[in-house]
Length: 348
Image 1: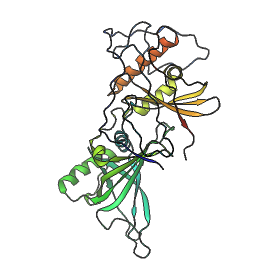
Image 2: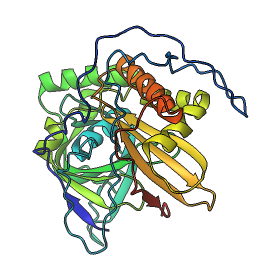
Image 3: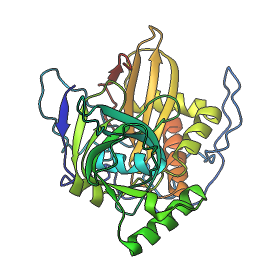
Image 4: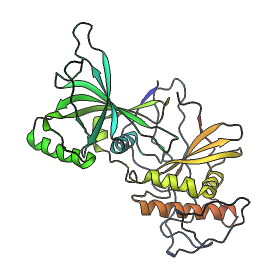
C-alpha cells in the first residue's frame, strides 16, 4: 500500500467565479419535454431562464480532477488551486463524528506465546478535539490488552457513503484510563448524550491520538495525518445531513444528476448510470458507469464554500439552473470541463 503525507498548512482555493449580480428573486424554470418521466423534484428549487442565482455567480464553476496516484510515487502534491477537496484531517474528523462504532486493536498480555493482535468491536464518542472516548469492560478469564494503562492501540473506523464508497481512518495512540474526576464527569455526560445511557466512570478510557492513517476507500492509497492537524481540523459542517441530501437528489433529481455529468465533465463516452456519492462544504463527488461497464469518479466544486443545508440547497439550485441554460444554449460555457477521471477498478 502506497502511503502519502499531507498537512493542513496548504490553503483552500478561492472561488473560481467572479462576484455575483444583485438580482435575488426565485422563479420557475420553463417546462422541459423529456422522453422519460422523472419523479417530481423535491430538492431543487426551479428557476426561470435569465435570472441569476441569488448567492452565486452566473458563470458555471470549474470542475476539479480526481487525483490518480502513479505507481512508485512516494509523494502527492495537493497544493493545486483546482483541488477543492477537504483535507484528510477534516475527512478523518468527519468520519469519527459520524461513525459511533469501530474496531479497537492492541496486543494481548499473554506471557506464554507473547502478545497477539486482538481486535474487538467498540462503541465510542468523541470530544471537541476528536479524541475517542470508550467504555470498556472485559472478562478476566480471556486474554485482553487492558491491564497496563497506556497500551499502544489503534481504533479503525469506517463510514459508508451512500453504499458507493467507504472512507476510513485508523487512529494510532495510547489507550488510557480516565483518572481525573472532572474529566470523567464531562466524558460521562458526553457518553449519555451520544448513547442515552449512564456509564460507570471506572470503565471510561480514551485513545490519546498520535497519528492517523486515512484512506478514501477500500484498496486506495493511505495518507498519514499528524495529531496536530487532526486536532485542529473541523468536521465537515454538512456531515449531519449530507447523506439525506445525496439520497434525495439521487432519488428525485436524476435528470439534474445526468446534466451535471454532461455539462461539467467532458466524459467522452455515453453514461449508462450516474450517482452522486457524497457532498461536503467544498463540493460533491460523482460516480458514473459507461456503456462498457467502466466506472469512474470525478469531483465538482461548489461556486463557493457552503456551511449549512440551506447554503447547499442554494448552490445546487444555482448549478442546476446554469447547467440547464448551457444545455439549452442560453449560456456560453466559460469553463474547462473535466477530462481526467479516476477509474474505479476494484474494491479489494
